Image (cartoon, rainbow, N blue to C red; front, side, top):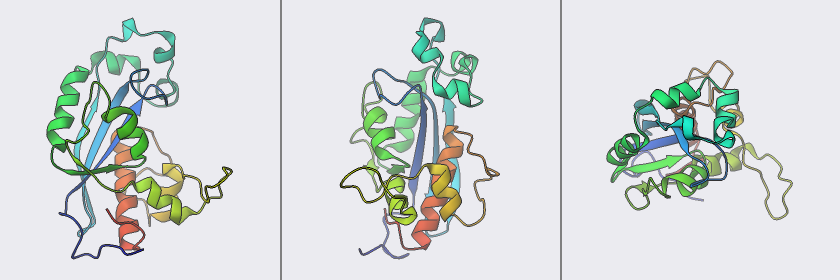
Length: 203
């Protein structure tokens, strides 16, 4: 496979997005409750925080499924944070404005974008330029055996890929992924930079 060199990659701004949600089913059953965006320069190897927000919903109207979602049981996110956050539609408009016309990726595009950002109420399909999934590149670097017939390697979790591939701890997670959107976007960003340097990732 041929990879971009430092001189011929796309315009030197790639936005990395991460979402935290109420479940794995995707919209409309599940909701995005946290979003984080970073801007990466592959040439300079830099990561800039661009946006981070919890999305506000009327959690008093939620059913038990949403109120006891994994994100609320296993991270520092709380229902009160969602209750007090900016309205979800304002956050969605902020994200649409930031990403419009930009090069964008994530760690698991099929999840963040296809299950959520390309669906109602986000409707972001076609508003930005999707570039190669960081997770798919990490799969071929980590080479974890897959149990599924026809698939050589399984998809590594973000914390495993980050700790295995990235030199040092530039995202300052101190060995523990906190499963918040901006922190995860930072981890994915430094992972992308490292793989680009190692010539195992191209946008």
